Picture 1 (cartoon, one colour):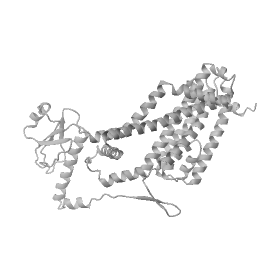
Picture 2 (cartoon, helix red, strand yellow; picture 1 turned 135 degrees about the horizontal axis):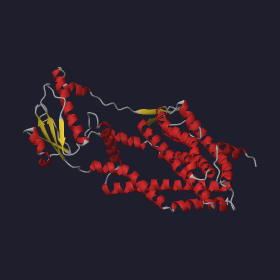
Picture 3 (cartoon, helix red, strand yellow; picture 1 turned 120 degrees about the horizontal axis):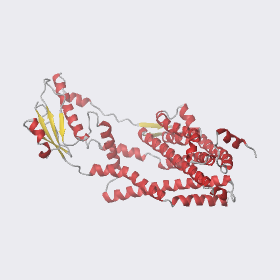
Picture 4 (tube, helix red, strand yellow; picture 1 turned 60 degrees about the vertical axis):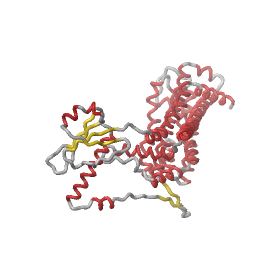
Length: 444
């Protein structure tokens, strides 16, 4: 046991002292904190005011364009060729030309600008013109636009989960969906990232022949377990540091600016909505996020059981890593260089990729039979169950998944150990699947 501790200590210290570990440990929180900080900064910063000149030859849209915080409209007159020729020196960001057409109500316009017109400008222009054209068409048909506007209704749909005892709990599908996506994807990334580190570490030691010296005083299985656990501790250390440093950066920013996470949430919702609707005919105004909607966002965030999510994330991260880490170590021991690993990587990567592909289906139908089997089979359960947990998982399913993942780790460790003990000392031979089977079934 002491020998395994020495291997764990060696693997851990040698990796946390690397420059790449230090860089990623600090770079990761900066990127994650930026997801909260940048939307708040953009939403509170006064952007460049863009002045738009309007040449409306129809006269229909006169006084219809309303200034916003970042866009100011001014009506101009004159010849379009002259206005275009002096656009660069006029101080205007763009020139909107609404030409007179044979149609009574125009449905097209032209925007001239010295640079690529921004989505905000084009969206605001398109939205204003569309509303006015729709109003004119309704009036021409004898329909009062005010009636249409009063008929528009925004539905607030609340969802509740009722347990067997009849207790009600408010739920938010969108929040569960985001947690499921993020949790499953993070486990996928961590398994690949740290599992490949185990494989590369074994290959390096094997190719440098240093493993022959190490195995003179320690058993192959002890060496394999030491490497797997040591690198797992590196991953946990980095993950915990990411959480603490991200929280520290966000807290510092909110303390210095007086901003809050609610502002970040509303700003991110606004940016997401703008991006989603930018190509269409509607650009929502920056003030459209009502107090009720903001309260709904905060209520959704507060319903997250962060403790439960974190505990199961750590378990499935560690369990999934240990299961796949043993297999990665076995592959590293069976080959002489990284180029030879490709033939053995496919069977390992298929379940992981399949788990990621299934996440949308899991979110859409978390109680389906396919989802059930994906969440209890050890090779897919770390990602599939993590995507399913935010929606609520029956206790029996959870126990079954945890038990099978634990047994799966023990089984793959035993399997990998039998491959490792032979392959780690084998050099210069192209290993096949038949060789791996002989190593596993060998009873010596």
